[in-house]
Amino acid sequence: MCGIVAVTGYRQALPILVKGLEKLEYRGYDSAGVAVIDSNNNLICHRSEGKLKKLKNKLNKKTINGSLGIGHTRWATHGKPVLKNAHPHFDSTKQVAVVQNGIIENYLELKTKLELDGIVFNSETDTEVIPHLIQKELHNLGTLNLENSGSTLLIAVRNVISDLEGAYAIAVIWSGSPDSLIVARKQAPLIIGLGEGEFVCASDTPAITNITNTILPMEDEEMALLTPLGIEIYNSENERQYRNPISLKLSEQIIDKKQFKHYMLKEIYDQPQIAKNWIKQFLGNDLSSFTSINYSFDIGFLENIEQIQILACGTSRHAALIGSYLLEQYAGIPTTVFYASEFRYSPPPLSPNILTIGVTQSGETADTLAALNMEIKRRQSSGKESYKPNLIAITNRLDSSISRLIPNVIDISAGIEIGVAATKTFFGQLLSFYGLAITFAQLRKSKTSEEINNMISNLIKIPSLLEDLIISHNEIAEELAHNFSNIKDVIFLGRGINYPIALEGALKLKEISYIHAAGYPAGEMKHGPIALLEKKVPVISIATPGNVFEKVISNAQEAKARDSYLVGIAPECEGTEIFDYLIPLPLTDEWMYPLLTVVPMQLLSYHIAAHRGLDVDQPRNLAKSVTVE
Ligand code: M6R
Image 1 (cartoon, rainbow, N blue to C red):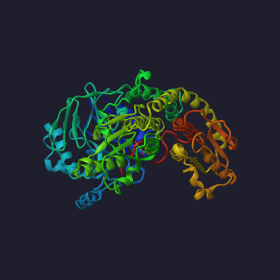
Image 2: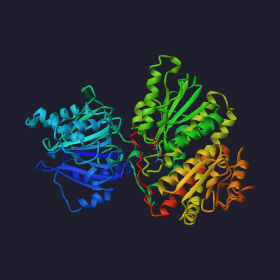
Image 3: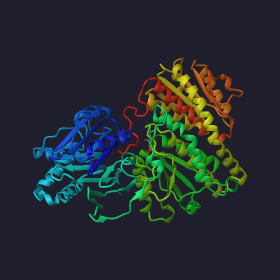
Image 4: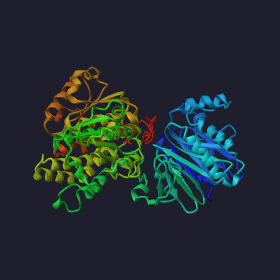
């Protein structure tokens, strides 16, 4: 994915674009660029390889007089992360500039045709076909009618879009229409912000909030013409669309690192507050009279559900694995978790009365959206009532594509997460699954009200347990990070409800420290991974009191016998003396542990990466949400 920001108005565009890009850098940081139409109607462009700060240095001594512009921060898909592939891209006359997010799947075919017409390409990107095609359309339309130049550009872009295949968002400017901005989206996000005498458009809300809190999210396959005088939005049938703007929630407006060195650390520290908010929102204010979890939709359709399937990627999939453990072991409903990217091309045969849950913090992950779209379509076209799609989305972004696709949304309300490695949103997703497990236990009467009340009272204790845990584990993780400064491989072990936490611990470490790490169910280690163990390979083992505690301790013994340095995430109790280093946990109910055991995993990866001087919030090759397949 990439970040797009664009503006038309009365103020200088350049500072607005740069400020917007600062807020979107989490979406990609391979290169950055801006293009502005200056007061002489010339298209001026500056681009830089690498992070935004390089572009900012380049722009330092420059002023561009102009109030129409586009900006981009790139996560490379087609073509290496080098200068020539940085956006914006242009037509041969350098009159049209385009920034794009997503992928143009048929670009090679389009490029070949353009090359036969004599067009010379300057980049390896899929994007560059767009400005060349727009210029061709403008030429065909006759560009001399400059009174309606905005409409001319709109028609030209519309004609080009009809030939594009793929999922994308674009913003286009043309020196022939010095105040018109054209934006369009297809399965990639774009939001329009309504300022006073100016309009901004961006891939995500943070790039807009310094100008306005009033937004118009664009619907799929819409395009818009923005000028300082107003906005025209059209659907794919070219019908003008009218809708009311919405106000952003406060949590979507505030992005503050506070006193923390990195967003990731701040977001780890946000988790107790997220738990408090969740308790208030989903359990209600009066806990003594708890009856059911509060949802923003009617849960009547869940009554006939016999099975659940969950589609997700990455960290969201790890949350789903814990969800599936809770749904099966606590609520007694068969549940399967799929990699969304696999499900799309090899779904299981249709079965009746199944609930499909899509989990994505960003709400924009292409694999998850595509898998859900496919599932909805094949169920709708089956014609059988029992096969009809029953859907729930779990997301952190109510303004995202998944929230528009699925009517029943569980909003984890964690506030925007800036660190590319997901932490607090994982925690929010876990809480949503605790809620769903309680709901299904009630619907299926698989737990007594006493057992459910017990679960509720344990959940209520989580915020205060977490507050203490984060403070103490932060110190421990910092100390341990020094001991681990030269490690190259780490094994994470967990079992039962904590097995997905081992997977998540390994993913976090890989993502931000670039250290090879693998998570295994502790009992599986002896079936192969044990061959990796030696003195230099630490084993981090999660051992929480419950039905597999002794088993995990025995598995840890096996690692110790192979000279591995053993770190235990466990309460101080009999058995845990085996660990070379103990990260202590409080004693609580077994069901609660994933909400606690994830914290030392997050803090350990954070401190190891920070200790190595790495860019924790923007790790190499990654982007916050992956809007390409
Ligand atoms: O936005 P999503 O939750 O759908 O994102 C899914 C994955 O791309 C994401 O969890 C990824 O694994 C993160 N970098 C994890 O830290």
